[in-house]
Image 1 (tube, rainbow, N blue to C red):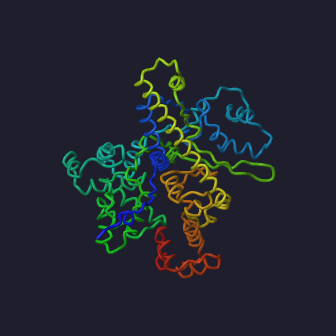
Image 2 (image 1 turned 180 degrees about the vertical axis):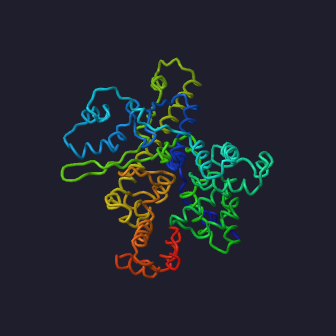
Image 3 (image 1 turned 90 degrees about the vertical axis):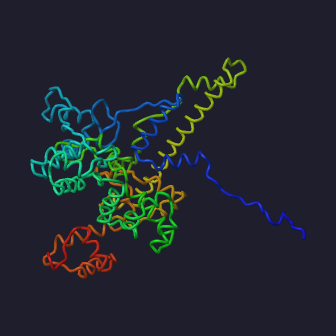
Length: 476
């Protein structure tokens, strides 16, 4: 019996991602802190790569002019009053007015005297906890905060603290509970599992939910990290796709390293956040004749500039020269590192362009939200944005994950807020209850929402009300 091997083996085309595409996607998915770490690592390893870095404002992320941020100065209350009063005042006159403290005098002005004294997040946590707990716990609090690692996880045990300070375990646990209630959400957790569970409860209270997320994080976190989706699905009696959805939810909304990029930032004396979260993108409103336009600015494009070292560029041009005195090893060294530097720069630039395009699309699709507030936030999916831009949905997900945008009102929000439709519904519910004359039942709230064109079931209203921390009508 003869066998035709040509019929058995047919060529099949298999698409594989190139190393360049993998690298570009990796850079796109990084947070600002992770990107900075990667750049520092690349700078240390590649002698052909150089960087020019600008000082940036710790509040809005824009480039400083000397020691002053023109954006924050121009948006200060005093400058706003001047702008409202005299539209014709130019920037020079405004700066002169502010430099004299608003008195019109020519006395010297030091901008740093108007900047609140700042403290590290560790100091802020310590002071805030000492204000909440008895004074006898002051040293205990300092020890706990001092044992937070760079990721914000607590690296000491309850027994260790009990033995060191001769206090009850309940007293230590109480301090830890208060620590874990602080921001960034997840700080003070004993391990990654506890950190993710704390964050999960927080995002669920904000209206973001994912079926089986709690069970998988609580019981199968190790298997999830090993991508054993089938094994988890079999034990929970669900599909592998549902487990994959949980994994994507965790990547988009949770952070196992809550203090990365936070412990080195500062908080103002008033307790308000002055640089708690550095925006990746700034959306600003620019007045034009008869209205205004929205501008989009990717912060990192102003913060640093990467380029190939001039000396390496010159040597790279000589590599192909006939009269080059370079050895073969030197040629290989120059070609390797210059090519690597160019690819790295290209991936950084592509990241910036992608962030810009996505934000510009969000501005157009969520224009009413930017104009009139959260009540006008429209239902929007990442798939819709991807379709508008001709991108893959996964690209939009990578680009917006763990990144923040500053709105024209100077509020810094996660990109994910643009894709959460129920935020506006919750705000309406909160407003209705806040202005109720008599306690409104969940059904009455659902009917009132329906009258406003918002179709929400009674049980959904009850869920949103509970997430807002509002009691039912019988207890209000």
